[in-house]
Length: 377
Image 1 (cartoon, rainbow, N blue to C red):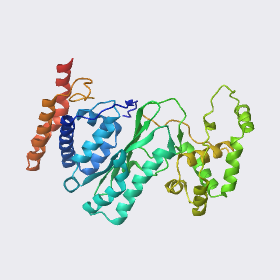
Image 2 (cartoon, helix red, strand yellow):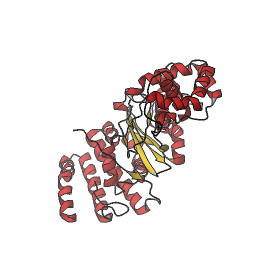
Image 3 (tube, rainbow, N blue to C red):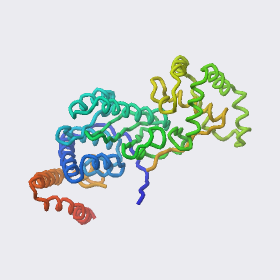
């Protein structure tokens, strides 16, 4: 069954209280222990890359279901709960300045897990590319401020990152999973979670943008003087006057493609031209390739050469112990502590062979919703 929907993640001020965050870490660790014991590390990574499972986990941990902190605080709790030597999984990155430490953290954790230098190099590339794509190749008005890479000693990984729109103060979450990935530049996301703004979004990872990708590479590999000439021709007022007539929509309609970048770093483009990237992924991976360069190439490809990119927004889209702000009801501290203890006991006794305890944990899924309805209806 395919699930679709929309989640609004507004900016909420303040921090998670220490008493709640401490319990979130404890409950995260217990849930992680159960999942890894029962199904293995890759199953945990696959579930955490699912936006609905992640959202449900945040609610189980007692956080807000519709706050931007749903992502940042839940990820922080998971990162603290994970022990690389115990779980074979680790997390690198985080919110704000912590996201800029991701590369160094991958190096340190990789050594701890005994990963090869080539594997560490691949993980660092994954971190850079997922961030570059959601900042430059998908231009939806949400600037990244949170980036976390969670990876196992077996080679699997997932990325959870979030952007903020400075105008409406809403967040958008991007999920990636290695198992689902065939290409970084062709519909690579597990899901993108957020609200639809009904605005055109330049999505250079869409299948509809493949021809524009190819044309962009051809343009960048041509003499930058030709590219500069094409861009300047599109910025002339006389050119923009004829576009309405060409498209036949009338002057009253706002045409999204005319939102041209006014500044391009031509020195960078000359260096990229000298490098001669072989494909769009290699082009995106180069230093200096940002949203303005991606957008300029896409628009020139469209308006001059007729290869149209996708302007469709790629966005595709429960409480257990209450929410931080009292929605839908205040956090039940006693119930949360009891849940942590039940999970701990279940895992500890399962380790020594008492499998019936693990079966009891599975039955909780059937029991808890019924008791919750009786209590709150």
